Image (tube, rainbow, N blue to C red; front, side, top):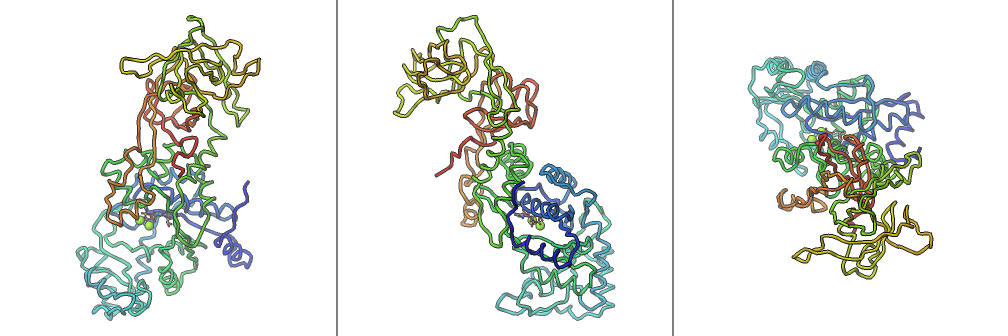
Amino acid sequence: EKIKKSNFIRQIIEQDLASGKHQKIITRFPPEPNGYLHIGHAKSICLNFGLAQEYNGRCHLRFDDTNPEKESPEYVESIKEDVRWLGFDWNEHLYFASDYFEKFYQYAVSLIKMGKAYVCHLSPEEIREYRGTLTEPGKESPYRNRSVEENLTLFEKMRKGEFKEGECVLRAKIDMSSPNLNMRDPVIYRIKKVPHHRTGEKWCIYPTYDFAHCLSDAIEGITHSLCTLEFEDHRPLYDWFLEVLNTPARPRQIEFARLNLSYTIMSKRKLNLLVQENIVDGWDDPRMPTISGMRRRGFTPDSIRDFCERIGIAKSDSVVDYALLEHCVREDLNKKALRFMGVLDPLKVVITNYPEDKEEELEAINNPEDESAGTRKVPFSRVIYIERSDFRENPPRKFFRLAPGKEVRLRYAYYITCQEVIKDENGEVVELHCTYDPATKGGFSPDGRKVKGTIHWVSARHARQIIVRLYDRLFRVENPGLEEKKGKSFKELLNPESLKVVKALVEPALFELKVGDHFQFERIGYFCVDKDSTPTQMIVNRTVTLRDSWAK
Ligand code: ATP
Ligand code: MG
Ligand code: MG
């Protein structure tokens, strides 16, 4: 078990436990079910569930479902699956903000009775106008000083559906000249005649985030409510509601920097756009930064949790290099993934002194990092395929692979020497004739002569064809969000090479793998069996190359 880095949140929690303010911490992860979770959410999940585990507390999974238009049970299910897949468990603590709608309503009625909320008929534009700016105080709504009785009647009418959408809202009555714009009589209820994925048509008024979130936290007895930095100046409002409504529990909101990752975008709205416009093949497209996309790409839960631990928790925003994520998955798969040989761009090699009808099985190591993974047999015969890039007719000085007259080691097999290069009418190399040295079986020579290069191969007679999806980054620019702000359109920022599909020839042992299994093609990269595979056609996704090919 690694030593966890300390951070300001851990320090606050440790103080609260030491002082006896809390006996036990309760955190929550509060996604809105309006899309699939992405790697940014993973940061919040690891933080909230991770802290709960570490300090023997608990973490709630709460669906923040107060905006019926974009929410759906499909998203609820995908979120649960992703949290579980990441390795976390909410046990019986699954909640929905929509279960508190009646409580929220009663809290709003209490505010009205205290003279601290009113029904307002200004339009959304007028409300914005009246709110003022950072340098200008706001202007009071003409509806601000209605009587408690009138407000109670109007709010009840709102609930009963007697007003049209947009006709009125309920606002908290706080301070129109507060230097904090969030305190200038924020809207706490609006009318939406939209069915809700859980409450159906029962409600036509819905609470805003600022009203619902702090109360949900208080209802559940959350001790530390962790959110991203953009909510920092909502904190006075969070505290105001709890104070004025005198809730029994007083959760503390603490903000941390959200995760931004280079070469990708993280807003659910934009990710949704990629899906809707068929730019990608669904939320779980392996190029998406969604948890489901990353799972399909071949990322492991351990690698994502490791990544979240390494990036740490800070108080100011930054952009994390995508290469760190790749480093984490390489490190994890290096320990776990079985090795196989597969040739992505085959070049035929005939071993002219190897008997035509002979074949043999050579022993190969499944994982040099894990002895318990054992060995397997790889078939060998007279005709094999090697990677086209492993041969050069005119090799540069430090090219140690195959070239005319040069000797190379076939991994786990023999040394071969290139004797003849066969070309087609266009001058393209189509075949090599080589000879092998029978004394070098296993890849070692008894006379100790040096062969620098080792290449992978497959036996032509035994090879099987699979489809390989070579994924790369979805965007070709480091900060697509920023470029977009400068006026570039989404589409021109996409990496046109983000997906290449090739046919590869692979050793037969690969066919024992199942959908979702991870493996390494030796010398190429880490891959994962895709769910689109059928009994007759295996399809695999490249998770990551063995080395960072984007390094500057
Ligand atoms: P988006 O802007 O993509 O729609 P969101 O914050 O509105 O994201 P929610 O479903 O409300 O999405 O997020 C659930 C939790 O995940 C929140 O507590 C939020 O702070 C956290 N979260 C979302 N994005 C990130 C991120 N990039 N880094 C860290 N935490 C995040
Ligand atoms: Mg949100
Ligand atoms: Mg959002």
